[in-house]
View 1 (cartoon, rainbow, N blue to C red):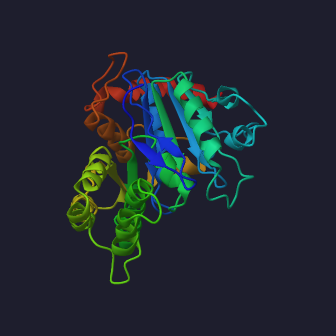
View 2: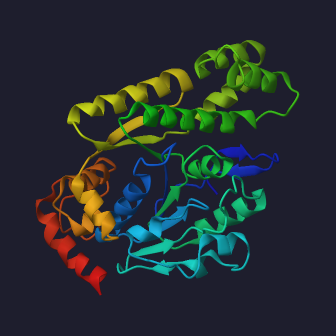
Length: 345
């Protein structure tokens, strides 16, 4: 197995990042708060990838608040992720749900796990191992809002997770807070309780009553005590490269706010947050949601749909069947209309 970053869980066990192999990519999507449109972005990127010929599995990892299935016009899933976590079903592949697209399958979240902020460690590891064994080109995880351990740990299953944010100040603050929680989740559990480095991280960092130190400054203080420990933390953080998507932008000028957030994250958290791009505020998104349809299928020519394909183009994703150039959507609509017919049967 390729070298993985190791992450300690609350019980000091290890949760590791899934290797990003050439034949399978794991993408995780988080928002820091509810209402950013994270689920819609996840679903429509998944549908777009499937339309481009890739085998895609969407996983609703929002335990207790699952709604990814509604965007795919699946009203009452018979089996869910909670059936797997609670061991009512032993194989993750047995809860895969078909969609009208032959390239797209879904693992629905469960509504019977409301309020469960942290599932047992063994359940997380079991889920990881089963995810690795799924047959797909892309596995997309739609994560819950907030900063509970489930969300933080699942986010770093991919070292290039996506943060979906809006231009509103509260959304940007929550996105930054989420990434800060990810950073502390990663570094705190590298060191045993009671050690000097652990005390520095907690007292000078997370629980500093005068305000937490910027991570680069915290690293300097740790370096003065133990250069090996600071080097270990730098190595961990260098491998976490999240990407930012600004959603529901009303003006193109608001993209600057995404760039500013990326700059603040680099300056104060020591994490390279790359600004991937934006999806504009588009009334067609609401219209398609009311129809329980992905907007890239319902309205392939709308601005938000073009933005989804633009994001994939920036990720160097190409149409697998060679029918159209992803960065130029002029020929795209005819192929999407062909795909859309299957969703109405």
